[in-house]
Image 1: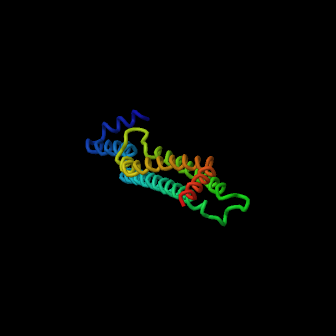
Image 2: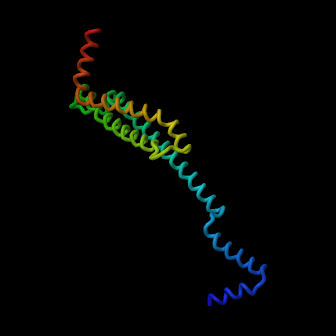
Amino acid sequence: MHWRLVLQSFRSTPDARRSRHQRCTQSRHSSIEPSDSVTEYSMTTATEFWREHEQKVEATWRSIACLLTLAALLLIALPCADALRPASDSMAQWFQRAGAPVTVFAFLAQNKASHLGELLTPGSFGSPEIMAPRLRYLPKQKRGLWFATCLTIIGTIVWAYGDILFNNVARIASAAA
């Protein structure tokens, strides 16, 4: 069957051969070359990916800020909340207990800050899409990590020695008065 097509192509006019060749070449290459819709789809997908990545970075930063604020407020507000204090606990013990939730929330913020650092660190050479959020959020991440570490240490010290600290501060305050 193949030889019949070859003979037929020799018998046909040059214009007919040329148009047949163009149709075959066009159909063969049309599946290889990307169409405009595929290119547009891939650009939209990449744009959506980087937009979602930046939203993830922003959400992680917000959770770090909330956890650190909560830890700092607990350190200040919990010892002052006398209504929550059990009757069997002294004020010094209540202050000591405030160190535990401060440590927990600061530790969670520290883990989130480490995760944010991973989100901001590219696996290879950085593209402009990753470098823009990196330049914006990396200083915040470092400050958040430093503040979370400090609050974890302070919360641990209060948790371990809060009653001693409270009694010594009360003794110094009464001696000064």
